[in-house]
Length: 444
Image 1 (cartoon, rainbow, N blue to C red):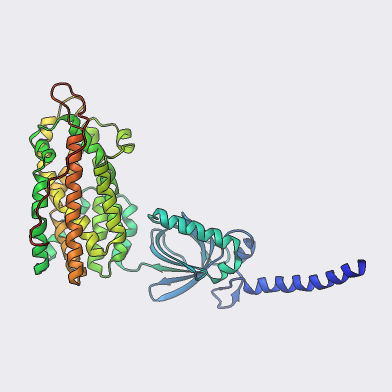
Image 2 (cartoon, rainbow, N blue to C red):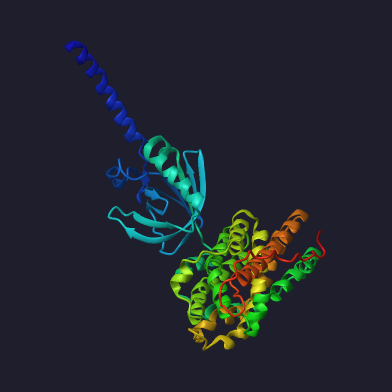
């Protein structure tokens, strides 16, 4: 038995040596500034920790290399032989072992030089949806368990090089309230809008009754006249807060769908404008005596929630033309009319129980009443450019109309659900009536 064990040991040791040598040969190599290939010291130190995936970085006309130090659903660390400036917007194309693919966006949050001449770059992923987080979590777990999968994986990082994409990276920086309005005025003076093709004229005729129905609904009309009860006024402000807070995120989803600089510039500029509106909505709510906690914990009515879910769906799954029609053209188009009417009623509420409408309380309504006339025109240009077939024309028309239908349902639901019975101030317990059907015009 002793002799047999000795023979077994004699066999196992060479195999271990060969396996160890094979692992060293398969370790990713880096090309230093001298051009000689060598194993990155950081990789050796993290041989059993972190995730090592080959990285290809496309920066302007150059193609650089690197390797990940670690990756998670929140972001990644990578070692690169080039520095990336903080705030750089990135498009990341992930191929995990050749069986799982994922395209996500991110931004450089830090870049530190290392002693070996390389750089440690910290990248944060942007606006990952739940299903993307789940895919990434599963992929990371698989990579941790299988070195072979790591070796077959590749991460391609495309660094945005145009000025408009760089503006997107600066959206997190402080923006003065009037900056966007001034830039929009300048753009309006420079931009000439193209003539409307026949399908756009048909679209406008088709949605006109829906827009008139919204502006003529009881909530908007009574708020404009100051006859809407204070309870109802506060209720719809609270109910629509999640919708307002999410709005710029829907626009941001479509930036990567654009293939021309002009459309991309419109989307980026629109996000910049919209990103401050949630804060302005909070100021308005405070002016009406609404506590912030009530805004942040609101449980929307089903009809209000349906409006939000519809926009998530069309902006996630729809084409660029459908998403822009539903979001920028329909919603922003009708918002200006709502704002112009509603702001007329503000003076009637000022001074009522708990209501103090200072300058900040007017910001949201003033902003939308002033410059949202341009956003739908810009959106329409994008729709014309990206609507290339008759089938798409019909889909864009449907998406635009559907947003207006959901908006009307949401406003009607807020009006009915929170109205008080005469004299007692109590809620009327009832199910909101269905929205009156508006016969379509021009399109069956």
